Length: 315
Image (cartoon, rainbow, N blue to C red; front, side, top):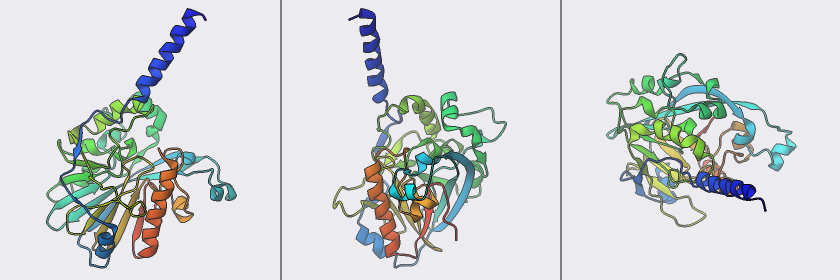
């Protein structure tokens, strides 16, 4: 065999090995000290009590992205409906939670001032901008403008997961603002991370370290949950599939319970027809399980208002 071909083949194998071993971020992930492992039984019990959290949903930006990433177009229901890949309008949300004694927290991070037209700063590499089409993001409210209206500032950020479109606003927050993530997201290895890791590191740099929720493994038929403040007011629900650490949040607000699915369900059509996300998810089979778990919770407690990852149900 030609020695030149052998060298080229060896180079390709080395490159594949290097790229496939690239983690999501170089930031250190440590066990979160906030919150305690609990049970779905306790979460359900909390839904029978009056809520205490002041909850606000903010539209941070409008965007468009391929429907095939957001929705499994090979699902029988999607095929029957004649759905095909297209550019799908979506939104980027930020949620603010005000606890009566613990202060203000955000779920996901919105978008920073660096995405405003004319900004000369950017945490995103050229490749990420081109690959994700971030120039199409139309900013509505920056994280800085939202946070400035919260008395006593932001105590921390609860991420649904670590994908770039959910961490675009962290750089608008003060340095060392605590950022909480689901287990396995920071250390996930795949080829895509070779392109996005540097941008992810810059976007999360104000966090310093990442704090991982300490979900307990247990009954496969029951979700693993954390009572974040120990009083049943805010719950982290492990909903892996889109990423290993994808986390939904149940907020017992003064306006009733609010479920933030994150990208366990991106779209209105997907939620209403029980069709899981598409090619953007790491583990499609697990995505099905997590989506069914969240939908079952809402069927059991129809007073829950659902907030999807990138579209609104309305009403």
